[in-house]
Length: 258
Image (cartoon, rainbow, N blue to C red):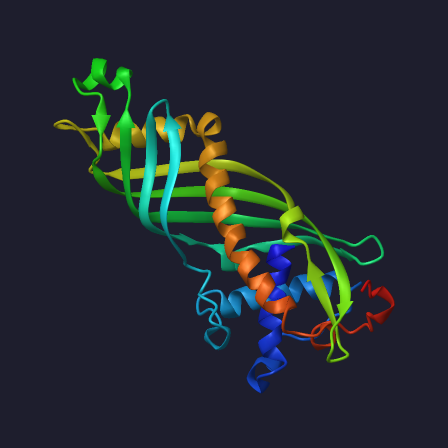
């Protein structure tokens, strides 16, 4: 629902600024093909620029800071500053907005998501002492992680409310978000990583790439949650300000719950 809400946010400008009318059009809530097409059009159009009028940052690249991810016992991958690229090219493979059952769900497929930035590995590990003569690392490095063939499924409760202005609005319950994801392949490219005087960039990249399946859950989940955090912000901005009539063809008054 969060990705859906981001696209709804994009639509808010399309109906308040004439220039956007040529990019995204209203859809029937039951027209899955129309909605998928418009969401993808919006991602392509606004992902790289954001929406300055609503103080919404770009999502492609999506900038983040200060993320810590456990990699092995006692060792964490710490990302001081980085970016996620590729979200604007994601495809919506299924969309359902079921207002009778108060549930919105969708499936999204991203061919590749690239995470790059200033990383460093920190912590201690006794195995490293035996191999390299030191058991700790706090070395900064430049690194890139690529997740390929990423599938994401979202489910989120949604209702319709009527505000004092007389218009209907969607109300999202993001605290009840349910999601799952799957990644078919991951690759790591790490530069200038030292333990003591040993440059272990290549061996670390190879180890992480070859063992990604056992390591991927905590690493990928951290970044998925970061993406969802951004979408929550977009969702809140949209549903609080834009009537449903501005992006949905149907009259939703029969679904009002307040």
